[in-house]
Length: 250
Image 1 (cartoon, rainbow, N blue to C red):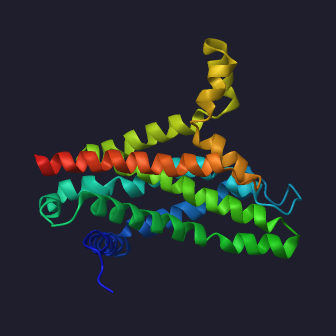
Image 2 (cartoon, helix red, strand yellow):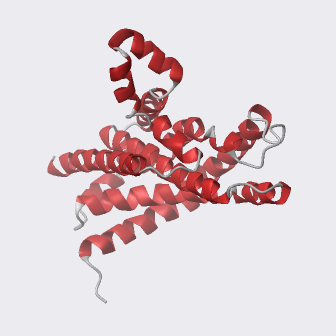
């Protein structure tokens, strides 16, 4: 079957980007630091075994905060590194639609995040050995965590396309991610409730990544949460395409 030009370009960019991850320390450092951090927070701060419950709530509770810091480090290179190395000029002349470049790079970064999550599966197995957890709830939380990782990476891709400096892309990504995450904290909601009223604060909370991830941690699959993550990813990748198109036009 003949591949469509856009799909073929997406796969080519995806393979190229994934190869660049596995042939440089970036992916290995991210996975190692992620596993160390999530283990430290889960056992030392969350007290997984001290809770005496057969669940992974202490594990998933820290995902938004860890992703918020580490995933911008993965995504900051997506476009900023191309600008630094000069490869962006060659990339812009490829006979490929912009969306295929953006999606191919995004999927490669998302694959690295998925690989990091897969390496935590022994923890799920351990919990099953120690007790009888709600595996459907844990599976739902894993899927939500993967969707959330995609949202943080899409934010990072957008920031990386807006600036040629990786460190600036990283800082902007962390800042935007923090705002979208912290918006769902009770402390922040109480603050906004005192200023704009409880109704407006509740509306603001619906834009929070934390708000939509909390429901999934309890094993609840909400269509609006799926729609939120898909929309956030699509919106950020859409802005990434506009930024890349602007470079092509220039």
